[in-house]
Image 1: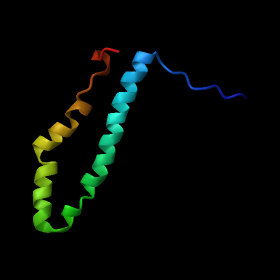
Image 2: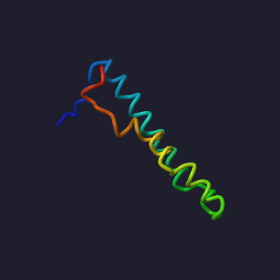
Image 3: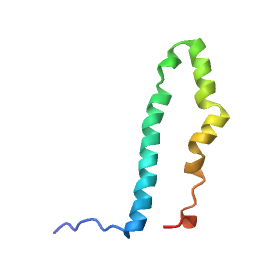
Length: 76
């Protein structure tokens, strides 16, 4: 059986998809440092770190765009 190359969507769709995917991948990479931050090793520093990175406002700022995305409402 001959393997067919993957089909791609229209160029404007591909551009939108690639940019969103890039943003998700970079965010996941940043989370690696966030979950394994050096500041977590010392209790006093860890408390400040958790407040800065994991309180309600930073979480909302970091993830709102991801979880409120409506694919059927985006112009492509």
